Structures are given as structure tokens and as C-alpha cells.
Image 1 (spheres, rainbow, N blue to C red):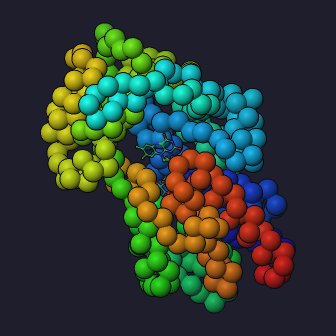
Image 2: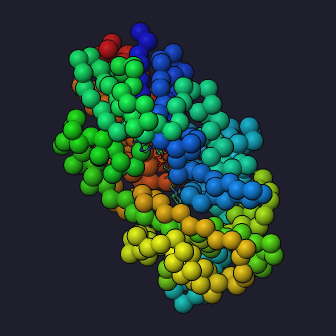
Image 3: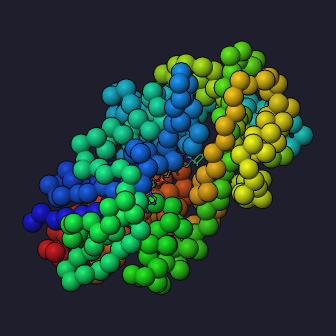
Length: 333
Ligand SMILES: Cc1cc2nc3c(=O)[nH]c(=O)nc-3n(C[C@H](O)[C@H](O)[C@H](O)COP(=O)(O)OP(=O)(O)OC[C@H]3O[C@@H](n4cnc5c(N)ncnc54)[C@H](O)[C@@H]3O)c2cc1C
């Protein structure tokens, strides 16, 4: 029997979940509040420049995710990044970092998500603001369209914990409280554009001390064209203390810190705040990597349920999709 499923959130967790279920012939509607699929795997694009200001690269340890990454590489949607990587200790001393396999989406970080979402029924610029359990299904409301015309047999929330918690408050208060315990931390990201690229003996660095956590020459990634761009991430601690700071002040302070490592005057500097950048502490049902409430037909997936990061999010979404298909088969809903 064919079912109607709503997946809310078109990131690297939601899209593979939707894909798996749609591939079995079910009618899947994917609702996304942003302009495009990708979530935190995204690339800011401007006139003649681009910059991955969210996820920087991904690694693949799980065999099923490794196979998927190989497929992405074969299809030209991802590529190995061989940038020279170092780590600065608290005293500012750089040590080389072992060259594990690191991958990036190509030519943009979101390429892998966008390709998987291309043949799905994806509605962008739709922010889900409410869920309602009606007899025999779920009704969703979006800020832009009001009540969605379809009644869904099941709903998946594929988004950061706090955002899922807000939507669950009225329909499942206990689950909402559990979800809210998964603490996510912020990151301020700086994008720096240069006509004269700064010279550096490395392409990217983990920074262990001071306000910064990570710096990278974004233009050193495969398939990136246009103006020379560096990206700078502040530490979670600094970002938390400066959440409400004006963008200009954030740019000034983080650029000063960056210039102590990589001197040079950028032509332009912009900043973006990721309020829910990564997982500080995971709680709800982490051992399974997702939540599936068969009785309510309600699922949750995302990096916060699966040890964080791109690989965890993908595994979380795929595992939830597989569990839902098993449940449909077993209980004949
Ligand atoms: C600055 C930064 C650096 C990072 N660096 C790395 C790294 O180097 N390596 C790595 O592996 N990982 C990294 N990560 C983490 C990685 O990006 C995430 O783990 C992964 O992308 C999470 O995917 P997701 O699908 O779970 O969530 P998301 O990507 O957040 O997707 C959730 C989607 O849901 C949408 N959404 C939310 N609420 C609603 C709503 N109410 N209605 C409709 N849509 C909604 C959002 O717009 C979003 O598109 C980084 C993240 C950040 C922010």
C-alpha cells in the first residue's frame, strides 16, 4: 500500500530518509524552510565567489556511508580534498595533521544533497510551524502557506534538536522535553575574500586556543573557482558569549585573531551565525541513531542523534527510513 509521508528538513539526514521511502513507491513530501536543500552542508555564493561556511569536509568510516561517498565521487558530486592540514596548539605552534581521507561536495558542499533531492517532491521556502494529529494522520502548517492540503500518514522531523523540540511541544510534550536536552552549540563563521590571496604554508588549520576553532583556504578545495576565499570559524565558547554581537563587531574581532595567524587585508568580510552548529551533548535514543514512534507514526533524525557530523546525519536519516519501511511492512498501516 502506498503511504503519504512528510519529511521536514532537507539536510543530509532528511533527504536520504525521504529518498529511501520514495524509492519504495510511497508519496513523500519534503518541506524545507531555506531556498534550497543542503542544510548545514551549504555554500554561500556571490558574484564571482563561493564559500562553504557550514560543514567543511566529511570523513567516511561506516561501510555503507563509504560506499555512498564512493558513488558521489564517481558521479562527480564529491571529491577528495588533499589540502595541507595543521593544528595550532594553545601556544600557537603548528603541527601537521595526518592526511586521512577527507571529502567535500563538488563543486559545492551541498551538491550531494541537491542531487539526491532533485527527483523528490521538494517544497522550499516552507517553514513548518505546527503539527496536528488528526484521526488517521498528521496535518502540517507552514508559515508561508498555512495548513498544508494533504493529510500525512507519518511525519519525520529532520532538523536540529531544539527546532524539533519546538514543533513537538504541543503534540508530544514528553518527547519535546527529552529532545531539548540534546544541547547544540553555536558557531560564528567568517567569509573573507581576497584579490591578493594571503600566503600560508597550509590550507587549513584546527586552532586550539583563543577565539578561533578552524581556518581554511576554501579555494584549495576541488572544483572551486573565482575569487580567493578563506573561511574562519570561532570556537563554540566564543560564539556562545557573542551570540547577539553585531556582525561588524564579530568581523573585526575574528579578523584580528585570524591575522595573527594569516596576515593580509581582505577585500570583503561577511559573517554568519550558526545557532545550532553542532552537538555538544547528545541524549535521546543515541544508541539507535534515530527515534521512531510507531504508534504515533512520528520520526526524528539528524546529526544530534548519531554522534554529530555529516556521516552521523546521513546514517541517522537512512536508518530511520529503513525502520519506517520495516514498520509499514510489519504492521500493514
Ligand atoms: C560551522 C559548521 C561546521 C561544520 N563542520 C563540519 C565538518 O567539517 N564535518 C562534518 O562532518 N560536519 C560538520 N558540521 C556538521 C554538519 O554540517 C551537520 O552534522 C550535518 O550537516 C547535519 O545535517 P542534518 O540533516 O542533521 O541537519 P541540517 O543540515 O541542519 O538540516 C536540517 C534542515 O531542516 C530545515 N528546517 C529546520 N527547521 C525547519 C522547519 N520548521 N521547517 C522546514 N525546514 C526546517 C533547515 O533549514 C535545514 O535545511 C559543521 C556544521 C557547522 C554549522
